[in-house]
Length: 131
Image (cartoon, one colour):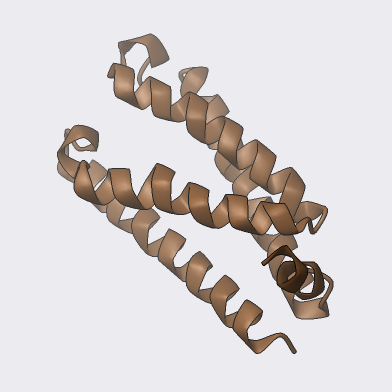
């Protein structure tokens, strides 16, 4: 698997895509830092515990994945896919009620889920095409 990815990450368009995703992940990491600093409008310690846990976990995930993807490391592609599925798609679909307190939050989750699916589809297309 890593041999396939070793080749794929060196390709021009895949490399550009990985760097673009890395920038999006870095932005996501900054959002989580902002949440922790209370910039989201609610003091962080007043948010539900599971939100705070997710902020810490997703900040770590976003930072590690961003650096790995920017450096075009094959392990980072696997890390990205596993992280999106286990840290975002599963929690935000199967455990959706735990993350929604207002209708606005439901729309935000829908946007996050859609964005993650688009990112995975684009990555999958590039890895399959290998051109």
